[in-house]
Image (cartoon, rainbow, N blue to C red; front, side):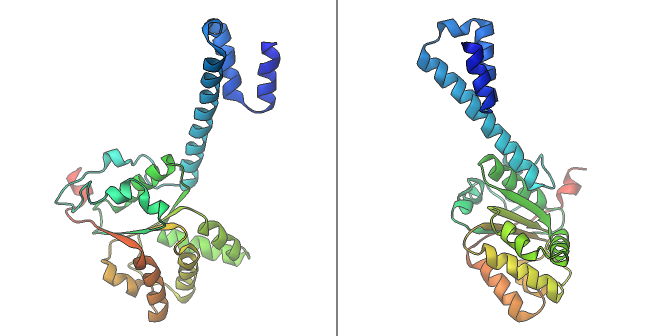
Length: 242
């Protein structure tokens, strides 16, 4: 009877549940467990396995540049203008629930990418969908989608990502097509999902990256309106770790 139950569980793709039952039987623990305890044990096993599989899938799909970056490894210090208290709103993921943007600026090497990836990693662990791009690669990807007639489909897909990380904005000025594509993405996501932008340029210089003033105003207004500003300072982290 137990073997038949295990077979049915496997047919329903409840593999962790069936494996836990088999292990319990082989270890004789099965005989000493109440029905409710057994049910709780095997359901927890299935739930935990599925949750772990989902997190692993979210992390793969995120394509984080530094997949090993975690919040625990962030170096908080006054010299970096980075304290845990000031980032609590970001680190606990509330900004994603509220569809806020995160705007990170700072000199080359100050840890912008690591910070962005650590936040992205935490978002995945919390069950949110995340996608990381460097801005140059992002613009190339969107242009390629347009070339094969998939632009609207790509916009729709990116619009549903709960946290879109766009790293290395600037200093090159975008072409007309690039800023139009960028505006379409930001407009699609406005007030419905969260976007994180990281740039070595101060935020007041971001307008220049988008070129034409009307488009630049439209993009920056949507980013800044509900944006949380993080301005990193200090020496290059690459220098301090060599």
